[in-house]
Image 1 (cartoon, one colour):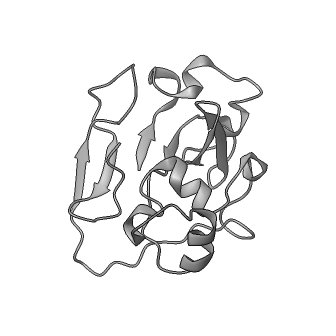
Image 2 (tube, helix red, strand yellow):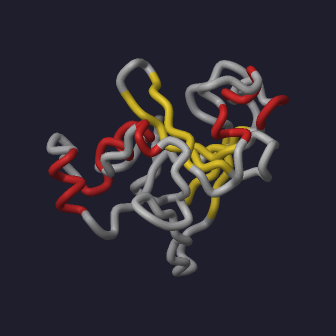
Amino acid sequence: MEAYLGLEDLAAHASRGLTGRTKPLFGPPGHAYVYLIYGMYECLNLVAEPDGIPGCALIRALEPVTGVEAMRHSRPTARRLEDLCAGPGRLTIAMEITRRHNEMDVTHGELTVRRPLDDGRDEIAVSPRIGVNQCVDWPLRFYFRNNPNVSRR
């Protein structure tokens, strides 16, 4: 997961202000912001700040625990379970998340985000974000150290 902190964070889409594209970022928390990157991959972000204050978390990876067969069908080239959702584009392809999910409430319904199971084995690590050209040294990437599902790029 990577945090994007709104107007002061030049790597954040919201730093360009309120536009048609960035409108969800300025809305209430608990909603999806889905956008196209490189003209081919959709990325899922979760709005995380109060209504009117832009800020979100880019979901870079997840550990598949259910729906694995459906994910394998969506990503047939993924050889290992750990490859299904290890990257923001891979994750959205595997889960069939598209821009039609943009602005969707993720607290219930078709696209629901739930608290992860905490088995006490995962240590949270922090590093700079990946693939940004601005504010590159900000330590806003959070991930489970040694988890094989973590996005590496």
